[in-house]
Image (cartoon, rainbow, N blue to C red):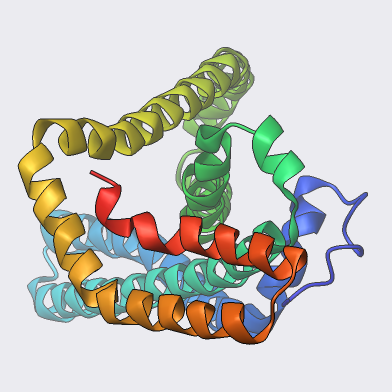
Length: 279
């Protein structure tokens, strides 16, 4: 296993997933560098646009137009490449972490006894291996850098706005607590819905599994001639081995007489000979 299952028994959800992410920490640092480049350039483009308005349109310095436009285009291209780079790195980071997690999950399932599977719904097991792990991958690959992106964009926007017009920046800052309260209320309302959706998925997976298992039984009754032909083909392939076993049993019956051996012979004959009577 990639991580010792006894080492994270009392850890929180975030600390529990960290050991699976450690091998890809260098990839996260590389994504962080590209992320910083992207945030710097995203703040630079509006400043360049403002300089075009102030220097070229208002002050009529037309010779500054091409250099400023070139700087905007270059900054946009570099920013696009940087954003693509850190998104791909973070996606690879999430995929590798989930690969290690799912591998440990499968290994753990193979070590469990039948009691666990008798008391746990198949839909719950399928959800843990598919929907829950995909939610973790989504958190690692997308939510992490988007949270940092929103925080950096908010702080950077306030800094730029305070340098341009401090009164407008204060007006924006005044409504921020109200927006945070609305987001908090939305999160509290969404959590029960998410849990209900997960329970619905578990019930759906269990029902689909039962239906798939029942399909083969239904098909066997509907296509009885086909199933009989298939059974005959398998019986024909087994017939030589059946004859060999019966012949060996006959020889053993003459050479090793006794009640115990005759009982064993009767069991073997009952288990082997009636293969052509199954239908």
